[in-house]
Length: 439
Image 1 (tube, rainbow, N blue to C red):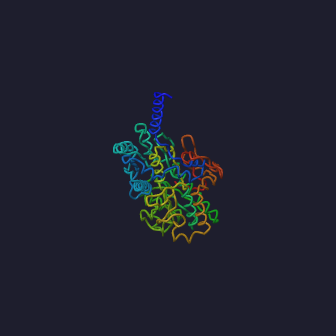
Image 2 (image 1 turned 90 degrees about the vertical axis):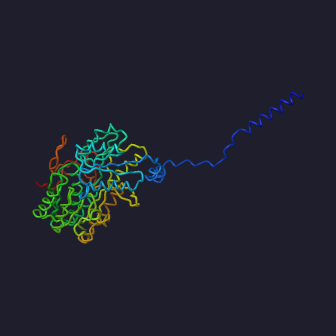
Image 3 (image 1 turned 180 degrees about the horizontal axis):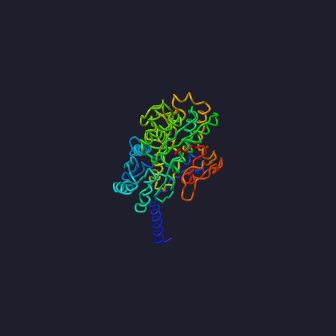
């Protein structure tokens, strides 16, 4: 081999070694990662989805969320708006990036201007806490595509992508209240001070009536349920007058209401009869009366529904257009308390422990056991009073545009048939057979 060829060969070998040295080092070998199981149940789902707290922590510091609630009534001294106000405060306490603002006594003509005022101040979610003043928010939903508008459902079910409708399945807790009321009455007469006939009111009353009727059948009692309307939600003098009439003229010894003032409870306390509460634990939250009068209340946790909207917003996901949650849905509060959407409650206690210590000895054990069992079944999503029972029309109710009140005695829904959410929320326009509607 000549000198030139030898020199060329040496140079080629040197260049090859230099190029190899400039290459990045190979990654160290590792054991192969096992593929995730196709479906390992709830644990896999929880592992895949961050918690609400993790979602909040992951949000940039400047991505705060402001929840704005328009209350149709005053807050102080009311159970409906009081429960919504409590929901806003609980969510602001739970999430460091959530603020709560509100307006009170919002009429339909003020719904939009108040909403726009709060949006200009940073509101991201705007709620109308009654349908009649929440529906106008739909008219500005397209104008503010980045805002979630929310309205309670009374019977209208219209939605838009950012106009969400919601309601809790209060009838489930009302059924449990009905069992307790039906067991407690000694005169066989139970009275309801109610606002006015709407699908919302009729549906809730139906849940209570079914509980009363089941207790009466189990105990071999004849029980009458009397309903008298005041004409609006918050009319303290009229509510007092109706409550007094029910006690004095109809011998009612258990009183409840589908109105918002404390007047019916005042009458029950004065008359020495049992009272069954609505929307809030009135003894534990407000200190209204005591468990010598309040046999039990049902408590509505609107925060469970609003929490879903907040979590969806944190995750950048769309919220279902209609939220209709019951006792099988829950959330954790800032202090770790787990609470269902609705539950029976009294003086800070829940479940059968919520039954008044004075009332408990008056209720047969078989009813207490049934309350406990049905509550647990509803929390597990295994039983529902509106599925289990047939719906037989009383012939009274509210004629809707395309849905007249069914004739008396007509079976509208068979037992063990699941009613659709749309039917329950928008078409349940008849009282159940056995309900006495007073003029």
